[in-house]
Image 1 (tube, rainbow, N blue to C red):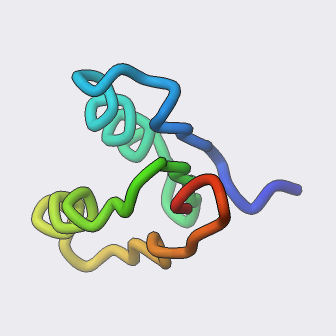
Image 2: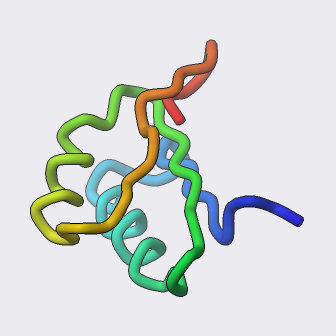
Length: 71
């Protein structure tokens, strides 16, 4: 079983759609589900945007890096 209910590969979207797709995917998650965000840069500003909207929910570790993407 996959540990993530959804995966968003942000580099596959044009800049004007990235945040829209990320937030729409997040909003579709059921309680207890997680999504994997694969990005080509450090998503710290996105983390702050999430934290301002969804207080009290865990955002997990969004700063793990691999040679190709931030995860």
